[in-house]
Structure formats: structure tokens, C-alpha cells
Image (tube, rainbow, N blue to C red; front, side, top):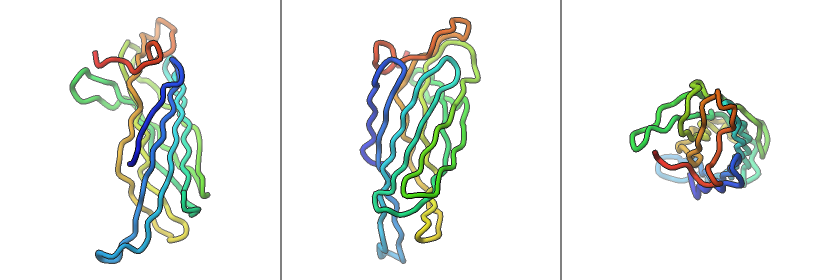
Length: 163
């Protein structure tokens, strides 16, 4: 993962961009290198969050992309816990994209973030699957008890605090 950056565009939306490079070696010799530009747009709702993702092969190579979108609940300064995930499989094309939804499974208040987990790229020119490593994660956001019937949000258009 290269150059991961997110911009909170309003209290209910964030845009994230990053790059990924994958390579083919024969022994210690680099045969080729490919670059993917990734983009995610997430819209926060009350209990289900809309995540649009786009992956562009910067070298013009047709590919398929697969992975999952993971909602994690923050636990203060300790490690977050995975709450729910949704798989995706986009392609083929030099640009693959689609929209998935990831749902809260708890109904109480809490802080959350989403992992945009590209796990595999299938390079159609080489007829091979390449595993991708890296866990780009959205900024933390605040969710309220479902009974409040209020959308989750980035408080004041900012990342939610740890506590």
C-alpha cells in the first residue's frame, strides 16, 4: 500500500485514495511491475454503510479484483474488534469498481472504522492471481444507539476521538 490518504468531505462522507504495486520475479530477477490506483468513497448511515470502490490498473492491464470491506469497532487504545464484513469481486477490466454495504451488528453507541481490503488481483495478461498485502483503514467515526435513529458521523467533519 502506497500513499494512503483520506479526506472527510462532510459529516457523513469520506474519500480515500492509495496505490498498490505488484511484481513478478523469476528467482531474484524482476520480470515486470504493475501499479494499481485505488479509490474508496464511504457514505455513513445509521446501521449500514455504503462503500464504493474503484481500482485502476495504471499500466492498462485487464484485471479482476477481490477482497472484502470490514467494519471494525474501536476499543479505545486497544486493538479493534471485527464486527462484520462483506466480500467483493469486481472485473474484468483495466478499471474495476462496485458498491458494497457493510452493516453494524450491534445496536449500541460506539466508534468504528472500515478496512478496504483488496486481497487479490487476477492479472489477465499473465493469467495469474497475485495476493495483495495491506489494510487501508478509514478514519474513525461515531455511531449512536439505533434507538436514536441518527446517522453515524464524523463529529464536526473530523475523525472521532479514541475515547
